[in-house]
Length: 244
Image (cartoon, rainbow, N blue to C red; front, side, top):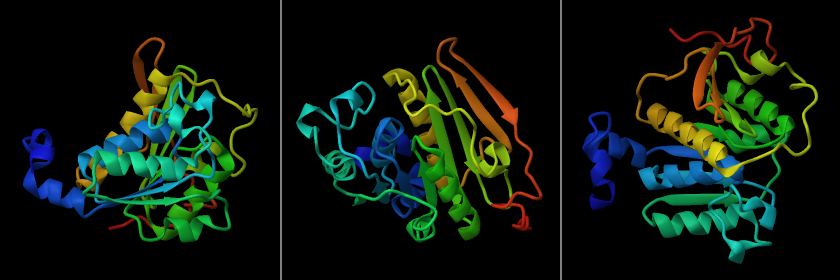
């Protein structure tokens, strides 16, 4: 257990928590900027099974923020290059890479069998498709996004907290640029917080955000929370009963 010695001494983890992480699974959709640091954190912590879904290849313009990759990876499929890097970091966990573009048709099958799903994508079609699939399957979802120095983080627990459609509506926000500005440091901050939220939940600790959207301002180094209302008429989560 030398690999995990420094986290085993944390009272929130210990041997029981580490065993819990080893038996847990997380599906990460997107192996780009947000996915890079996030995947390294999950693998380093010892999450037992990690899925990676991405349909893109590594380009040189990725390297200012996608720290899983190097110049030697240019042209390689991100999911498999990421899996190779994670296996080198921690050979004691299972990595399941897939090259696939996520949409409303395939999302339900892709999320089945995972303890938690983490969205690290840059398009709202995939976000809303996965949100709906997770709500229907009762799987906790973590969603993060970055625009320049600014980022957001939301945790969706179906039937308990608001979902992405409660926040954005069925069509997503208007006026989204095809390419958002991205700087490595703010991306890594949001990505690390997403990984932290996933580990907290996989350890069975209290949900850190509740109904709030976490807003991160990397320019002023400030954080704020905005409460989201769960919509009873939301087509994705409105009909899901609250657990006892």
